[in-house]
Length: 148
Length: 148
DNA sequence: ATAATTGCAAATAGTTTGCACCTAC
DNA sequence: GTAGGTGCAAACTATTTGCAATTAT
Image (cartoon, each protein chain N blue to C red):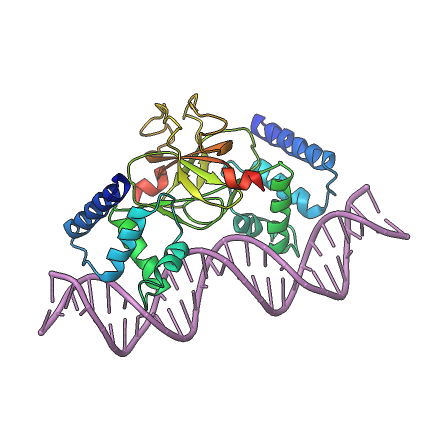
């Protein structure tokens, strides 16, 4: 078992623990989705998750994938990412970080090299807008798409 | 005529000029949409623009609004904003600036008070991703929605 | 046992497309 | 006159909902 696999197992266990802590039943479907999110380095859409799991998890329904992800987002296990491709992408890393979105293949990756700035912003703007969260997305083209 | 109206006229004329410079025909529909975008302070969706214009612009079709906006985006007159509400919002201000998105009413506004940081990011990451653009969005609740 | 969760089918929301007609230049 | 633009209807994609059957605790 290499370092990466170990990390994925840790991430998966962490998610399972969070799930139970929130009183959510650990169904086969939920475990499969959490395991899948823990092992992916990109941030898939609901449909991409469904397509990846439908083989190994026979009888899995698309509806369930959407519903499970929604539940996870509401309980803070997973974050929904807004993208220009109009499909929601999901990220099991809930710590604030920037994303790279490829305009060619629509893939969403983590922006490890992008230093998150000390953004100067007020908690409440003068017109009464209360800021809760900040999303930083870099749009561009991934290596593969640049070659085409 | 007050200062605001003057500014809107300027913005509208600027957009008309850009339109012509790109060789785009100045149809009634395109002019109506540009004028509407120039006078709005928020960033509406295609449907919101359609609803606002269908009365004054009789016979206007929703399809045309979508198609015209798409053309404008391709020619760089207007920017498409990705939002958590899964609908595209449009902004006639193409200079880089942050947005405030209300999680209550889904309205998108300019983040005038948010100082855009000197983001430390490479033009090309080590894994070959070429960054073209940066989107900074603050999620929260507007004054109206906080009262409810 | 029972409350939560799932799968199916059908509905909905946002957006796009094919094609015949129309209009800006 | 003609290339480009528009409107209609229909298609399409992503997502949600109602409800009966199933499963985790």
